[in-house]
Image (cartoon, rainbow, N blue to C red):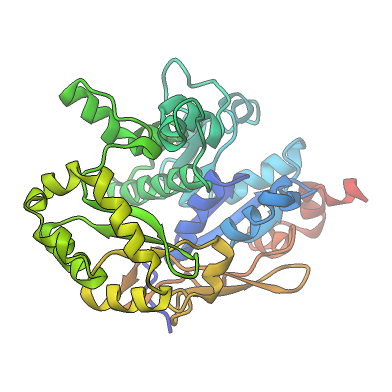
Length: 394
């Protein structure tokens, strides 16, 4: 069961994006109830054809959108886009500034032509010295120190998902919501720009601030200085890995009791949290040996009932077997245009104890909604045929 709350119902979003950051922005707005119309070139968004690790990009971040094709190299295609924008509340794009300007779609031009339109531009950088640079998720992770903090010294490493792109799309959607609230007060459209670099900078801000306050740089995460007595990966009797945390004096006592480590609990050198942190070099081998003497199933049962932070070490594919992921509303099923279905996570929040979805979450075939959307604008069949550019591909 899902909630019927759709706060953006009745709003029309025209999206002209590719890859992840832009599409995720549109998807978030669609899951909140907006009608999202994705404008694709006649051959379709190239992201559809990605393979390997890119195979999940299009189906994950384009759920529930309508698809129309327009040949924006033609005057007919551009005219059709402008007819569509005249009916839109929000325009989401992630093209280079120069490319948009050549198409007559620069944000300032759109704002002048459509005074109530909210233009959401998702870019590599905000305005400044780098604004015209080409950016990708991995590029900005290297630039901001995210990759430095993720890998060991000398081996910068991008994080294991497109989290920065997705977070950038979320900030883009967040900005759209703010602009919609402002438009309700001033009646005006607004031009928004969300930067992938600035998003990643925000994600490493805690390390920047530590340096600014203390004058001391944090080491990379694999070599980090610990603020907790136990915060590590161990092996159980079966050789299965498990993460265990004990971050307070109370959790330290509980963990010692569960693992039969009365000598550590009673040791006068380990009576405060700082004592326990400073002694990690000799206490962790003792904890590890105790964990190796217990089975995984026994440990997780005791940890869960006693409130000890713990986790198995999972691969993403294993999430399909996780009982919490499979709770009602945890996964939504979508249909691919070529047939077949797949499951993907819902939005990570609930309203009135129910997950939220913006309606149909299937993937539209390339141009599946072209005629319906353009005909509703009053365009004839001939005008549609000239605008969509599909005949050129035949």
